[in-house]
Image 1 (cartoon, helix red, strand yellow):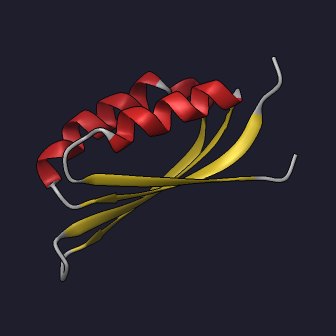
Image 2 (cartoon, helix red, strand yellow):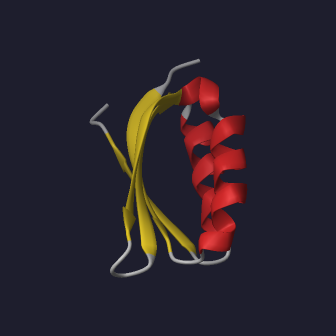
Length: 81
């Protein structure tokens, strides 16, 4: 199956969702190239960047699960085909 490379930008405003977010990322660990998390204490949020290489539907499913978490927003940018 053909894969796509993408980067997901994630903002966590409700830090109680962080544990579930980490669980979801662990579920999709085989597709994750790398991730970086930055706590922004002045604004009481966390900012994550997750690079993935996965089939299009898998990336969409991952973004959907993350986006349904309370206080979490996600945007995905894809590398050109």
